[in-house]
Amino acid sequence: MFKMSTFFGTGHETYRDRLLGRRLLMECQLKSLRDMCLEYIGNNLHCITRASQYLAAVHKELIIERLAFHDRFTDSYLPHVTYNLFSPQLEQIYLFRCNQINETWLRQLAASKCKLRFLTIHGCENITGAGTAVCVCVCVC
Image (cartoon, rainbow, N blue to C red; front, side):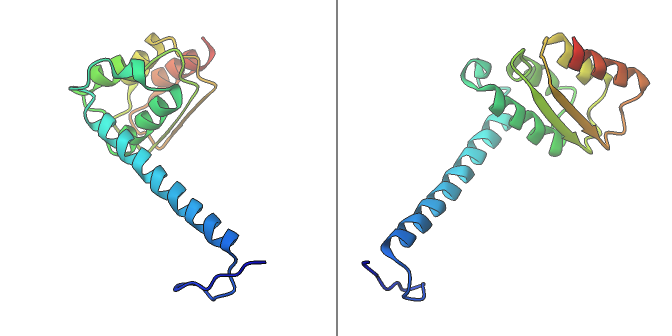
């Protein structure tokens, strides 16, 4: 088997091992590029026209979760989120410790007629009993 010594390696790595290492490195770089693109879209929904037509459901879900994590669900930004990200294709959303999630947000999500299989809300202090009822409607209806 062909062996190739490397500057960073032990010298016992095969050529195939190096190629696999490069492939993993490239995948990590691509993931960070994807994350940067999703972050850009999420932060600029107010100036991107028809973003909902170009985003897959999984990307919409990731952007929603990212916006929730970074407390971007302000009253002024909610219409842009509703228009561009809430859609019937949404299947699962995980929201953790976002105090901006409230009954209004959940009603907007329910109005989008999404068919969520999973809606995880943890540590969102502004969700009350009425909000819980809306959550059940979002997941069941």
